[in-house]
Length: 288
Image (tube, rainbow, N blue to C red; front, top):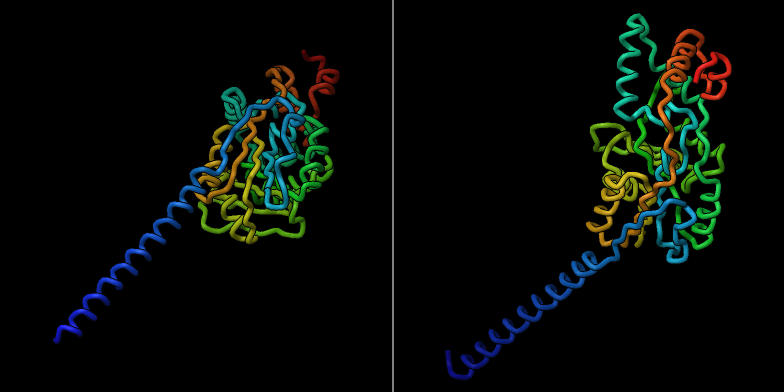
């Protein structure tokens, strides 16, 4: 190689290294920017005792709002249903099954409970809050841990939930959509504005829903009475670089366990196939 070619070769090699280094530097800057955006996306959780404390101003058409249902939007009026997931409630059900060993249609009894029991909105004013979200362009859905599928005479629990919420004035967005979400051990389902997680991780179920409908929100606002569920949604936002505003709701009422009332209700349900609310059962059986 002559002197001229040697100079050209070396200059070209240096230029190549400069270009490679510049390319790596550009990629690194991009990665830092993306990771920084994910890490620095606003993430806050606020305790509230009323839905009227939820801030609706800081949202737009890139915002998704998710409302939990039980003990956040609605709450049963009766003592048993308000406490059925407590230790006391689980023990009562266990003893009830032992007391009536020949009864096998417990799914039917559960369906009767869902049909007959009163489950009003905790705060009717939440509907005005939801209206304000929508005026800003935000999408709103329900995100509940509830089971899905058949129970008793209900073919689809998620359909029952949709109809129940609709009767109270709540309808989620995407009301024409209903589909299962694959890849889970259980059977989460989206049904006409209600995302029912079937006890799966709420964040993972929400991620599957977003992917399915090709929705890419920049911000998620979640309202739930369960801090674990809020954190699950918050973790999704961290992973995907979305802003997160969680509201830990404590507006549900504490309802005392009324043993005599519940005993009478359970007996009447099993013998007559009808659930009678606390107030009526006390008058009917003279219980306290």
